[in-house]
Length: 283
Image (tube, rainbow, N blue to C red):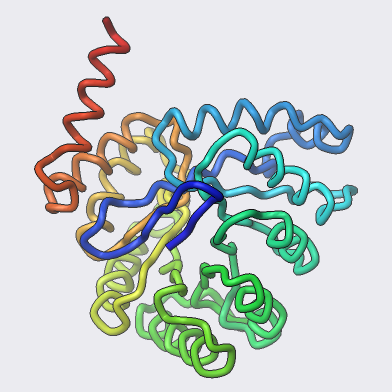
């Protein structure tokens, strides 16, 4: 369960899929980076409105800009996002000090993005997750490698769960595993491994899962069509959320259709409401 000051979003098997809007992120956006270095946060407002309008349930906020004070920038961005929307926030940073600044600034129950199975990363971040009563995204890779086999990913998932629950007292329900979506442009077999990993994590641990939806199609043409095919397959295997750009109606519609077809949308009410909203906008 994630929440803002006024809204709750629950991730879970059998529930509607959670869309985590990824756009509030300066990676690969030179103009946005320059604006942030100059203290101009106006682009965040546009991104928030676009992601929420597209159907995002949660907003990922990343302020990883070189040559800036990331803890201060992330804190200010989170304050701004909270003024603009009641959607819960996923606080995204590789800098421990920035994560703590973001958690301290947030009014609600956040999702933290992310840890790996590396001992030093867990030791640095899990105490913050516990202190601020947050949930955590965890990737089953370690110092050695990003595992290409499902068996190794399951082994590292077990390690993460054991350390988080037994050493830090974090509930298993607050651990969201990223099963590692790899680009098919390099190897067309990688999606089968991801789907196997998702299915086995659901069966063995019953955990929530998320992933970067665009990773799968990287390097391939017509990426939206690939994303719209992949996510319903992953949902059937047990994926409960995805970090994605909610401005892509083709993929969002595919997710909502899969929710209906997998009986995660009771009586199809969300599907019907979305259809009526589109009709009204067209009219």
